[in-house]
Length: 203
Image 1: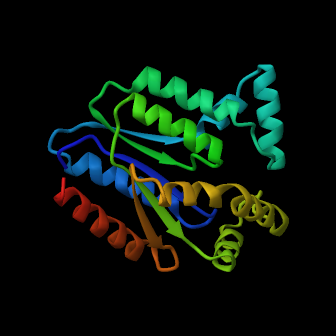
Image 2: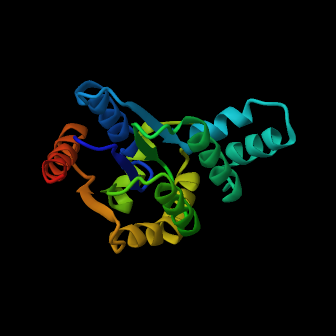
């Protein structure tokens, strides 16, 4: 890979985007001959860190996360912005995971990538059916993975994230890769890496 790479992982809860983002991060760290840094930006991690604090914002975020409520766009956007300002030096790879989740966020993130001259952003859409997502999330047996909370998250996906996917699918400045999310982790990873290697070969 000749250039700094930028990736957006997107898909329904349960599609395995976090796992695949981790695998890609490990691949980049091991195979980039220039040994560039890899920044894996996860909005949920930023919010969980805030929730540990003692401020008013911490209290509100902690309550929202505990109830599975949505966080207003201004907060994740401000967190990404601070991270980019503090960490981007012009010689690194960037992976986003779980962001953006709304169309307005996608447009603002697009502005950030253009500001930092990060072109040929690759969107990796892991396409998993509603029924498969429910089954996988229930099997995780996490405390917040109740039938009701899962259905709420998937309802949010259909209402808010689906337009983001269409935005990227039709945007000429992005490389959009649609990946079948139904198989096992290894098969999905082979599909992703095979598609990426084709893209890198053409750079």
